[in-house]
Amino acid sequence: MRLWQRYRADTRTVLVLGLPLAGSHLAQFALQITDTVMLGWYGVSDLAAGVLGATVFFTLFILGTGFANAVMPMVATAAAEGDDAEVRRATRMGLWLSIGFGVVVLPPLWWSEPILLALAQPPAVAALTQDYLRYLAFAMVPALVVMVLKCYLAALERPQVVLWITVVAVFVNIFLNWVFIFGNLGASAMGVRGAGVATIIVQVLSAAVLIAYAALLPALRRYTLWARFWRPDWAAMRQVWRLGWPIGVALVAEAGLFAASAVMMGWFGERELAAHGIALEITAAFFMVHLGMSNAATIVVGRARGRGDAEALRRGARAAVAVSLAFATVTVGVYLVAGEVLVGLFLAPDDPERAVIVPLGMSLLLVAALFQFADAAQVMAMGLLRGVKDTRVPMVIAAFSYWVVGIGTSYLLGVTLGLDGQGIWFGLVIGLSVAAVLLMLRFWRGAGRAVPVATALR
Image: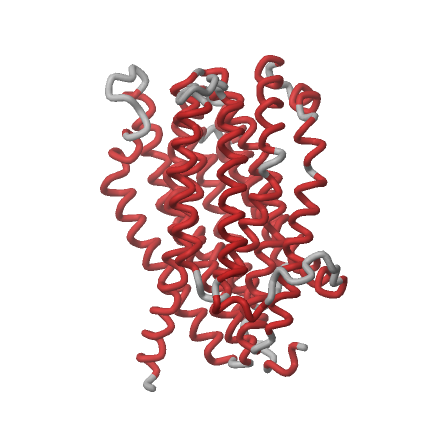
């Protein structure tokens, strides 16, 4: 096969894996959006508690997904080696660690009001948020189980089922919110507590469907995932732990960069914070595509590593980077041409603040156009490095780039030098760019070159 034909095949593989995963990430994002919108229709207090509670839950959840993300390269590599036992061991211990994490974080979620009060949150909002988090506490374990099984199935090149289950979950969540938030079909109107009930049901149902699928699909029975599930495998658990916790910390570091930017934007006023929130929602939606392609890169690289095929690994990595950068180019065009329309979708046509917030949001999207390539490159580099099971140094790079460079530069430009919101966002551009350069250099000059043959992986 000619080289260009191989690259075309690699690109097709990345798209076949990445597009369903990107769609599932977008659907997962839609779950959060629908909760926010429907709580906004119910009442301001419940909306405030919902946003605060979701932020707390998501921060802990994303930390816990490190173990799920560790399962993906481990399963991809083991499957390429034909090692069914290793596929089973990695997935089981990923589930064990995820369930354990969900149990550990239950107490702080259950008794969250004192923590929120210590963070200077209004007492009424803190109390209502605790009520919400007490429901979400019981959604953590099934949500993390869903993440592990999604990564397991995606690594086995079955991303389509992940997409469809997540899409169905969005519609189920909307229906259950309608029932429990607003009190329909004989249910009592529960407000934000109803959103918590809906979340528990959606996550439990999603987990149940994925568990059944993994157990009953004939092509997956060979892995006997659930046979003697209660038996610990300490060696495999240590491996998942070593690979997973740095991934979780790196994810939290990135989320913390944007959370800190929101705090700083709040110093400039409500309108600026509103524009910032709208711009972040838009960029986050487009980012889901890059995240899906990053997951595809992890799988492609992990499988090539399992076969000991260094050339296929690098070729697949180049294809994944090319696809992500092509989408980043399209995104920049969308921001430049339709940015005003996108920002306007978040505001009522007769909103008196529209004339101020839309231009502010537009100015931030113009800066966001600059960091599209950096954001695409850094998340792609993370995916490539996970594929070769390199997570600890990338964690350090991420923490330095996001917290020291990103937040520090945002404060310097936005606050100290008085560039306000655009200064904050230019700081994001610089932090993401530093991460992209350092992580890409680590892969292409180090981890991406030293690819052991399959027999050396054991």
